[in-house]
Length: 360
Image: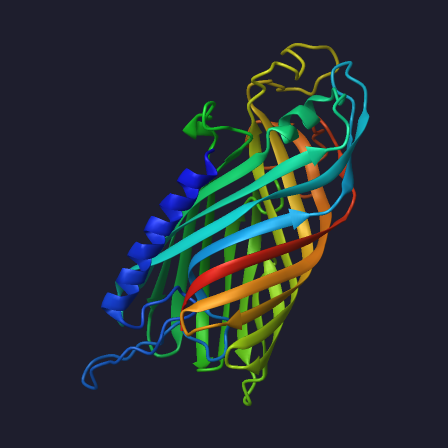
């Protein structure tokens, strides 16, 4: 996809989100709303805000770079196994989050993300179809909505829904919307005080590569002196936070990053249907790359103004899954259904920098 076009779209949405924020005052996403006044004669409701959390991002423009590593592709349909040396992969990481409804009874945000991984291989003679697909680059376009519904002064319900459009598509060769994936999350929570928020729930997610159904624990806490805290939505991510001052934060923790990418097979390099030795149900028009990474990292955040913050991440990419499957289905824990390809990827250091328009 054309990066200039994508960047222009996100900047436009960023301008809209900033205007929305200016019009409604203290609107933010579900983790960072300001206190809302309530009528003393009516029922009071809790707010999503927890003192000391890292600022909510209305617009984020970032760039990611991963250093060299190896991908070991398994044999498939008579095509031999092959090792590929990745010099690096890099790409844009864009995000926008727009508050659209904000009052003391409900808070609704609309958002979107675009993330790309452009691979650079050190060998131009790679013949395994996995490398051909990766060489086209992997892209994810997401649209989402977040709903925070307070029930009373202590309890709330948090809902999240997101559509993922992930694959090796290009601007000239877009894939069908039928290959989109849906992420859902629901949490029931308690707001014990202005420094502590806790919740439990469940999610349908693709962070582990394939479709997964998992329990969720939300834990947001800030110490009394507001110097340190915890920001966690387990098992997806968790960080310890230290505040040098109001505008300088250091987060240390991890995030699981992943998706299921449709591989177009436009060059017909994957084996034809009916090839001997392929798994049951194999369809070369429904090839999916189940990609998942565990990223231990440090994240340094610095506010240069109340509204503009810079972020610099450094960490390690630990491969959890880089397997090829056929179709979009639930593969339960302990399942013995074979993959089309079971591949391995070595670890790689990575860096990410971003500039962010935040809600102070």
